[in-house]
Length: 315
Image (tube, rainbow, N blue to C red; front, side, top):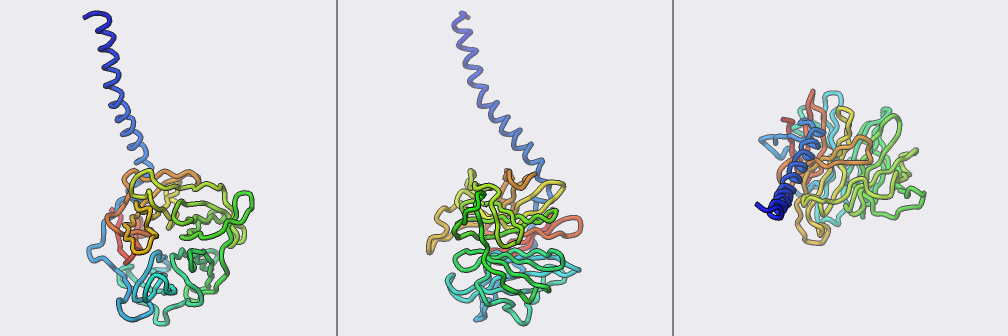
């Protein structure tokens, strides 16, 4: 073999090896990322008798239910707040309440709806210093806050005000509000037309200021959430933060008459700002979104809240 032929052969071998190296590097990176997602956070099996909660499908105020409901497990009781409506998407959405001993069979509160003074949907509920705080969407996706001493009687506290990192007011809409509280500091995750998830902080729980003016979680690049993302809940597990969020591949999801698939997904962070999406999202199959994680002994239960409520168990 001539020197020229040997040189050409060497170049060819290098070029052939490059895709393999990239593939191995990609596989290694994926495996390394997977290590940040313990099974408790990402592997779930559906309950065999789903759905466990739905609209009445009768001529009641809650003929239909709507994402996102929220579930807390307190003092041996499961408590669910949900949105009910009767008619098209444009009719008012009101707040309902249900309880359960086992998180499977639910009893609606006899005096539902428990709050009908203002459009209330897509709510997040937390308890802090003995008081319940609810962050929810109002009409046209303007987020507002309610408070309660017992989780049943709620008082409206007003619309949220969100500022840029420089203190300038951001016009709505901003929806799907989710709060994380740590060391007395309050963080708000919110979306704007489902085009990304932003993070803000507050001293008074009603006026919020962006930590940065770019989303902390953006669309894509994978297909399942290239059209929409919205945060449902953030929890801390083994010194890492996990954001459970819903997404859609359809950019035109908001257009009248459009049917879109919404999926349940998870991302991980060590600082609440920089997030890595789980490489094997979505975490459950099908059009089941608005995921909420509820402690269940040493494991977790996952409830999806769109459009009926489904239950999943940690594997």
